[in-house]
Image (cartoon, rainbow, N blue to C red; front, side, top):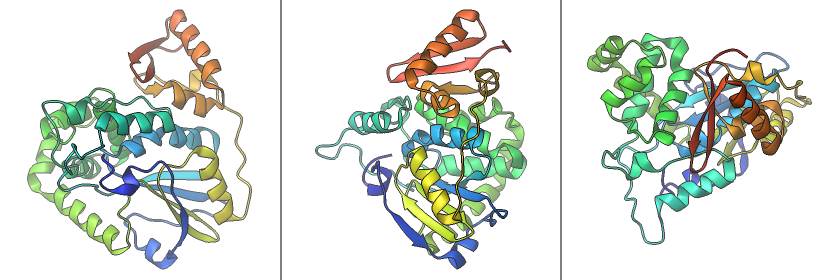
Length: 302
């Protein structure tokens, strides 16, 4: 969340070979099927650069069937560093993320009265979801990020997280019970130990695995760079499929930034904004306006 950990605050990074035997020991890691590439993002719900990676993730899912994506949950800060270092402001840092990634982002969650003191609780919340709803971890992670960086909520607060995750289909009583057992925290600590032993401590880090090995890349990476890395580790071209129709991309109750829609449809921001505005006028899309960009949700099928 702050550049106190340089790679969290850096918009660029460098690729380096990764020890494949170590990579195989990473929790929940599977080699991709022949001809495919696995892209893993080392993440924390509070990582604003990982929030900025969402347009890339959604483009991969909609346009690159031979490139599989999954999150690798870690944890950034047990105790958040001081946010008032000389020459640094959270607003300026988040503005850099917005300019680089195109994602709308608010500082309310980290500058407001209910500020988080650690990113670890939010990570533990995702482990709790995995224990009770294993198929909902990705959507739960997305909902927590939206709550933090669109709605300005402290997702390290268990009560806040419970409310947010209930909207993702997570049973609130089961969520509370899972946290009370202590099992999510134990699993989180085991994951952190495994990641630290492999030197995976920078957020974000991409692990790109293909038939020719694994490459680790630190820092935010745009879509063309991710596709290029996939081709390097697989020795083959991974072409983009024809973009899906807007009606297939925008599904009810999912929030999409303009940049995310543009990446998924392989269109310019201007053309995408025109199409979304028309969809809003037609009544099947709802717009949320933020100072750093608009967010769109389908309210019904067109």
